[in-house]
Length: 117
Image (cartoon, rainbow, N blue to C red; front, side):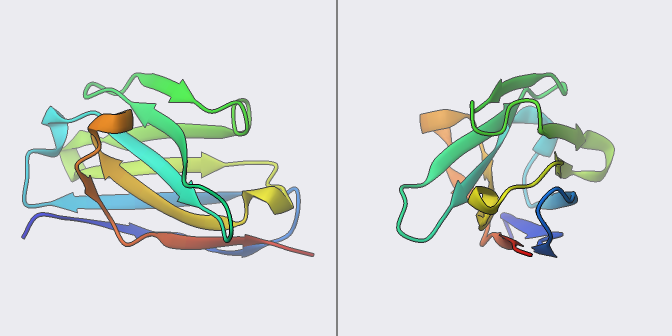
């Protein structure tokens, strides 16, 4: 089955860190650029980061640049998002996507991140 499964979300205090993972199955993971998006209640979905097939970060949104880091392990079909210095406005459901920007054609169900004291 072609799918993406995210994990690693949770509740964290402001200033804390989390690392999200996304495991891909059913397709050639290393052949695709990959992305992270997030959906916060009452807000439009936000495209926050992307990485090339060979592991070069291609994009960070201004809202996360300098705090978040995207990476991947092609041998284990896994995409990561390291999130540091988390803020309340980072509270959202985080989804990984196959593709880049408007080219995203597969998404996972997402993992919830809540930043709260």
